[in-house]
Amino acid sequence: MKVLLLNGSPHKNGCTYTALEEISKTLNEEGIDSEIFQIGFDIISGCRGCNACAKLGKCVIDDKVNEFIEKAKNFDGFVFGSAVHYAGATGSITSFLDRAFFAAFRAGKGEVFLHKPGAAIVSARRAGTTATLDQLNKYFTITQMPIISGRYWNMVHGYTPEDVKKDLEGMQNMRILARNMAWHLKCKEAGEKAGVPMPKTEEVVFTNFIQ
Image (cartoon, rainbow, N blue to C red; front, side, top):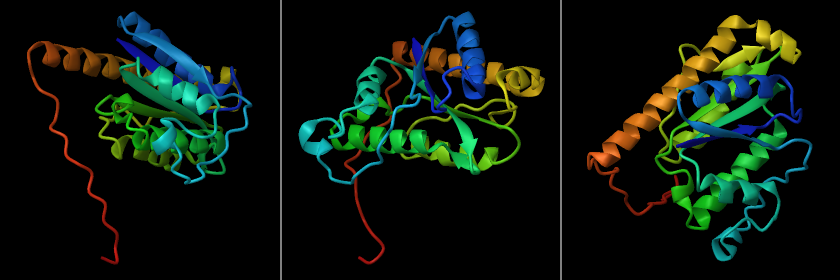
């Protein structure tokens, strides 16, 4: 079993990475492999709403988003990490996830994320954390992904990685989250081996508010 951790901060080894690294370390202790995927300083364009992904089988903008979707096929769970910018998720991770989830769905690759557990974690100097968590969790709830929680809201505080390491409660919660993720994955595997079927799927119904 493997968990893919997405670092949505532009800083490769910054505060968000420090929290993700603690999760990765704990997952490995629980027998779960993990990998951190860096968005970094790459310019990530937002979704164009062109629907070309339905024909191409991938996003028309060929960058790290398509790489992430292909890689995600081979993972069993996900952790999305973002720094807090202006009381919300970073612009790069927002554009990244908008396109990744839309392209996967429109390209008929919904199984990339479907029913796989996900968790969001955020880092901030001071505030904006809960709003950012709410924003990131919506990607899971629109894709039938169980949300993994910790003992508290999944956040760490600090201006530098050294500060984050001093946030003992926040770092502890990263470890608790990781153990909860490992437990869920092991329970899911046990259920599959015992013959418990996955939830029944239905054709998607689209409606709007004027019809």
